[in-house]
Image (cartoon, rainbow, N blue to C red; front, side):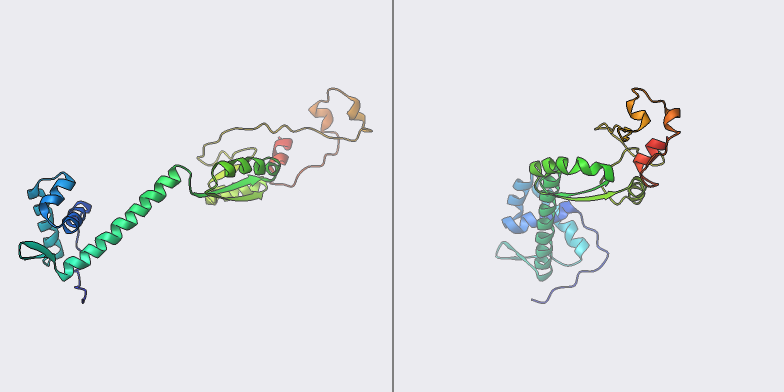
Length: 216
């Protein structure tokens, strides 16, 4: 069978194609109308409108039966491929909504490496179909990833205010000062920030959220 060329620029509706598919599959307009809960005249009108858009007869009547023309057979195959593809999409969308499948791109500051793997282990046990991709970086690099929208979720100590994002606190991250037991301040119960500022302090690199919090 030589495929009949379809003229470009035609505009058909999903309803017209569904009506056409039902008529072909069920063999007549009456049964198609019953399946689609439409009147026979509505089904006939939809088929006629579709025929007018295509510009070629879709059926020919042989011994009181509708037989597909060549262009009608081409359209039937196109409808089947389209509806099959749509059914696969609906299944994929339903699976994604129920977290049965999909991906999660997660970017975290380096201090999160001590607890995020444990949380992701629990997440993966509950949702094994989700492919998790995890990146660790300092605060500056995570903010840059956020600006580029590289990931789905970000974990950091201080969310940037320059972006329109939603932030949720879910875990405390206390900062404490650590010194040698022989240090003069080690035996003091209360140390003021002014006194602490007189001491040399080892800090994280610039761009680190921990350093930003300590300096503030």
